[in-house]
Amino acid sequence: MASESLTLKLDALENRVKKMAEAYHYLKRELQDAINENEVLLQQLEIKNEEIKNFQNQSKITKIATLVTNDKKLANEYKLKINEYLREIDKGLAYLQKV
Image 1 (cartoon, rainbow, N blue to C red):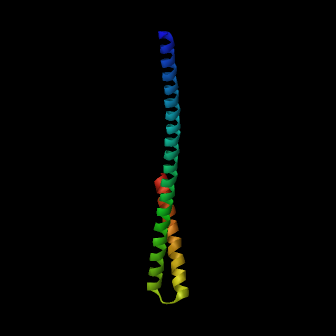
Image 2: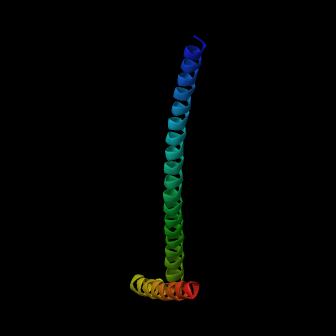
Image 3: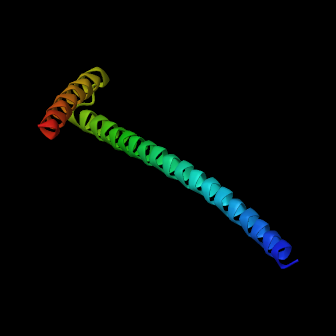
């Protein structure tokens, strides 16, 4: 009688431990998924911030080119040249960061 009661209690305890282990593994997967999603979102945020920075630079370049001359064609040429210089500077900075 006592051994049957003990066996039932052990079975109940074993079931509870199994459920807790399953819950642990489920939550562990959920956490890893959240960590992975967070990394992706941080990368996307970095890309968007870079795009905003580039957009702001484009706006500044347009203003500079327009201030230098009122001629639309010449202003566009200045803008293109400034963009070319900035790309070269960015390449140089990227190279220096690698070194």
